[in-house]
Length: 408
Image (tube, rainbow, N blue to C red; front, side, top):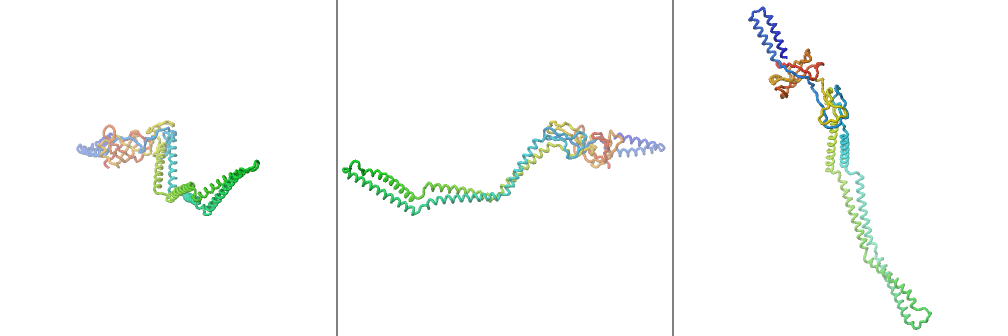
């Protein structure tokens, strides 16, 4: 570009010299000097640099996970919209993890709902019935125990005493009869005639009656003693144990009822809410990991490169696709020195030409100046130029020349 300006200056100078051929040599020299000074000032207001045509938006895409690419949905040259799916990894494991996380979240939410709602009317009614049933068992056992004491009356004792007295009298009568038979047998032992009935023969039957009467007397004595001693201690202890067991069951049932009626507890609700929040975090993490298996277009543009084939196994960070928005081409300088960049400001007007398109000129504007020098030989800064119109023949990567008007 600098060469073009010097050619233009030389032509202007030649015209001036021809025009002044009829003037004096002194006038011609003065006029040429003025024209040359004007042209030099005009050149000094222009900063020129070489640049490259670059899309405003372009990127290379890769997965952050490793796996098999089960779907590759684009090819070079395809136009895509922002959000379109470009490629898909095998996501079976991520799907299972998400389902498990969602199930755990549902369980946590169900527990929270149950805790927040408190006990149901049915559960309270059942607890009240348990208390009443235990109290009824206490009453029944106490009644059976008390009946052991109330079952013995004075009439029962009097009847037992009468039975004992009668048994004693009856036994005494039998013993007396036995004594009489023995005495009779002793008195008649010399008068006994062979073949006649001996008095002692009747004594055998009487002896059996005496034995039976003695047993009856013993039974009557035991019955009277039992009545006088009161209830059986073993039975009393048994019923007391039943009363104690029923009382413990009643207390436990009452405690359960009190616990139900005091619910819901704020602490339980807070714990359940924390469990729901934790489960939700797990679900969100599973969803995020599942989303990493799908590659989508970050912006609308054209696929410029595809590096793999479908069903290939790829690693994290491996480049899969390159895409760009070719409707927003701009120029980035590649050799603008630190001396020249100091004269450039955002908003400066720019004339852009192209090495491959010598007849094409485009106006533009400086939209960004790099804050630090670019890597490479020398100290150069990148300046971004936005073109007012992008010629259809311009392609990504073409060489461009920019003339930046730093005067205006």
